[in-house]
Each structure stands twice: as C-alpha cells, then as structure tokens.
Length: 86
Image (cartoon, rainbow, N blue to C red; front, side, top):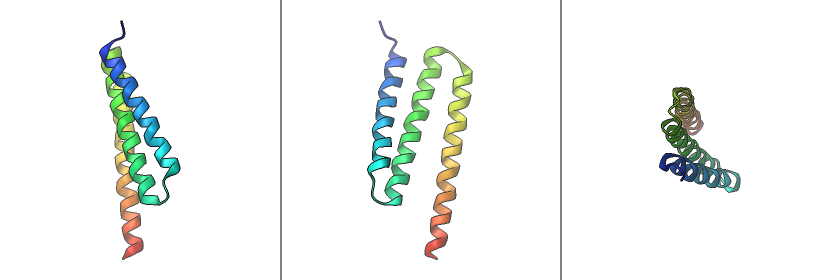
C-alpha cells in the first residue's frame, strides 16, 4: 500500500504542475509572479512531505534552500516593481 506522505507529496506535485500551467497562461506579469510563488510553495511542501516519507534530510535541506531562494526572489521583484512606479 502507498505511504500517506508519498500520496500527499504526489498531490502537491500535481497542484504545482497546475500552477505552472497558470504561469504559462497568465496575461500579466503580477499574475505570473503570483502563480510562480504558488508553484514554488507547493513544490517546497512536496519536498517536505517527500523528506518525511523517505527519512532523508538531504531532501529537506534542498527544500529549505528552494523556499528561501523563492522568497528572496519575490522580495527582489517586488522592490524592483515598486521602483518603477515611484
């Protein structure tokens, strides 16, 4: 029988793929950025569930790095976007 954590990780991966489709189909840059943030957040959650299921801390470290890079990217893009309007 499939492990519950692996099933949850698979569900989050499928949701992240749906968010990536939204990134591709979005018309404006803020919509694309929002969808990309959702996709990365879901991917980080899937990585967390995968780390729990496998009992492997290397996957958890990679997930934490991915989430931090995504967060810093959003902050940088928001500041860059805010400078254009000022």
